Each structure stands twice: as C-alpha cells, then as structure tokens.
Amino acid sequence: MANPEKTTEKPPSVLRIRAHSVASGVAAALVWPRLQLALKAALAAGIAFGIAPFMPGSAAEYPYYAPLGALVAMYENVAGSMRQGLQALVGLAIGVGLAFMLFSLGHPTPLTVAVVMGLGVVLAGLPKIGSGRDWIPTAALLVLLVGGHNPDSFSFGYLFQMAVGVTVGIVVNLLVFPPLHFRAAALSIVELRQALAQQLWDMGKALKESWPPEHVDWSRRSESLAGHTRSVRLAVEKADASRRANPRRRLHPRDMNLDYRNLRDLERLTFHVQDVTQVLSDVIWAEDTPFVVPDEYAAPLGDAMSAVGDVLRATEEDNPDRQTELAGTADAAINELTARLGSVPHTTEAPSAVESILLSLHRMLRVATPGRPEAKPATAPAD
Image 1 (cartoon, rainbow, N blue to C red):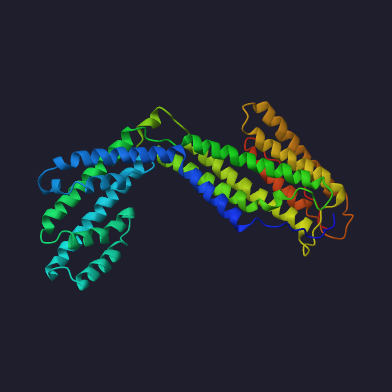
Image 2 (spheres, helix red, strand yellow):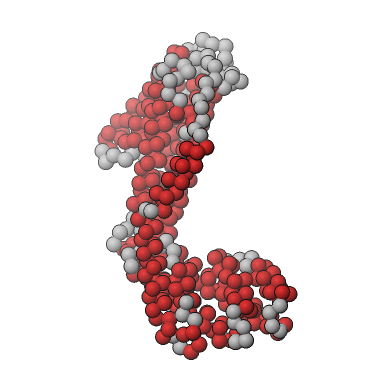
C-alpha cells in the first residue's frame, strides 16, 4: 500500500488533561489499601500516645514523639515498616550524637547551627541508611535548639519515645491485617496481556481497512503500553515485598517466581508489539518511510496478527486444548505467509515491511507459547 497523506487530530485541551490527572490522583488516594494504611497509622499513633506518659524517667515529658515514631514506621508492608523504622532510629541516633559532639562549642549560635546542618547533610550520604538520612540533621537541630540547657534529658526522651512509637507502629502493621498485594499483581498481569491482545486485534483490523485506516487509536498506544508494563513490574515487586515477614503468607501462598516469569514475558511481548506498532504507523503515515505493505499481503497479515492476539487472550483460559488450537492456527498463518513471501516476487519497487512484522509476530508466539517446540519460519530470499 502506498503511503497516504499524514492525518492529524486536534489534541485535548490542557484543562481536560489536568482535570483527568486530578481525578485520577483523587481516585488513587481513596482506594482501600491507602485507607487501610491510614486507619492503621491512626491506631498506632493513638496507642503510642496513650502509653507514652508511662515511660520511665524524663521520657514521659516528651509523649508527643511516640505517635511521630509510629507514623515514621508505618509502611505499606511489614518488611518495609521494620526497615523504615530501624533506619529512622539509626538516623536519629547519629543526629543526636552529632549534636552532643558540637555542644562543646557552647550555646547554639548561627555558626554552630550552620555547622550542624552541614555535617548532618554530609552524614546523610552514608550508604545503607535509607530513610534515616533525613533524620540526621533534623535530630541534631532539635537537640541543639529544643534541648536547650538540658540536652541529656531531651535526647533520652526523644530517642526513647521515638523507639516506642516505632515499635508500636511495627507491631500494629504486623498484627492488624498485614496486606498482601497478590491480587493487584495478578490483575495487572491479566490487564496488560489483554491490552497487548487488543493492540494486535486493532492493528489487524487496520490492515483490512482502506488506508489511511478509519481507526487510528492503536497508533498512539506505544507509550501507554510501555507505561502499563512499568506499572505491572511495580505491582509484582510490591506483591513480592508485601509477603516478606508477613504471617499471612502461609495462609495465602503464591508462586512469585511464576509472576516474575510472566512479567518478563510480558515485557518482551510489549517490546515486539511496540515494534510492530511503530513499523505499521510509519508505513501508513510517515512520508519519509520507503517501506510498504503490498495490497495482496495486507489481509493475510492482519489475520496473522489477530491470531497472535487470540493466543495472548487464551493464555488466561483454563482450557489447554483451546490454547494449543489457537497457537497452531497462528503458527500456520505466520508460516504460510512467510512461505508465500519467499516464493512470490515483490510486485512493487519499494521494499516490503511484511517480513519485519512477521518476524516480530513469530517471536511473540514463541514467548506466548514457551511449551511448544520451536519452529523456525521460512526466510524470504533477499532481492
């Protein structure tokens, strides 16, 4: 097919884009996991503040630091809660030690405050301290300015109450329905696989329309597919992190190795689908692209593309016979068209893009059906 004139559409207004972004952010903030985390943070802060006055010695004079410690330790998973709480306490201890080291310079002055802040930022670069780096200059400054004439009492109360709060936060996160994000990871994998199948179906449909195709949404999805893939990786990693140190994992076992294998396969599939999307978009709209899809190959290429999409969709089904049947149909369509390309000379002077698309489809099929014996497609001879 010859390259037609490039078509353009009016982009959405900035106001609509911002409104959609704000609406998406509000919706994400109100989902149940965030509400659950907020409820647990409130519970931990309340418990910490309730027991803080009963702490020994001068620590009882600083009860408001206990709920702060509970909030610091509250994280979306148990392992992260332990890590974040301990890192914060390490950072606080370093900051307090820094302040005491500089107390030999006398009462706080602009110079000593500047020195403490500078050294605190330097020490915040220590490796493996994580979120605790932010607490080093904060703790040092509080000891210098709030501790006043009794830095020993303040430092003990500050550290002790923060440790109490961190402990309460970790215990609450551990005992009060510690979350497992398995369902979100599983759903994200299914949604991405369905999105890739839909992209192949839409491109197969476009190949059968008069060019330029009436439906052009598929040509703009390359970046959204890449973003979707990144979201799936984050969901799988989040699910993996949520099971660490989580007592509920024994009641809800899940094969995370399988999830990671599915993720890697989907990342490879996304790469190939993006490649086909770019090739087909250039053939249709780019004026400087010399490649074409000959008319006689457009319909069978669209059928092969749709057949691979059917294979991706069937991966979620429990019928292995149906999966094998669809994989065989897609494999036959790809090999038949590849053999046809090798036996029939080109009818146009411009080079054909069909071979590149077929190679990508063959690779998609190999990724989607790893259990099938590998069969190399016929290779079209060079002109």
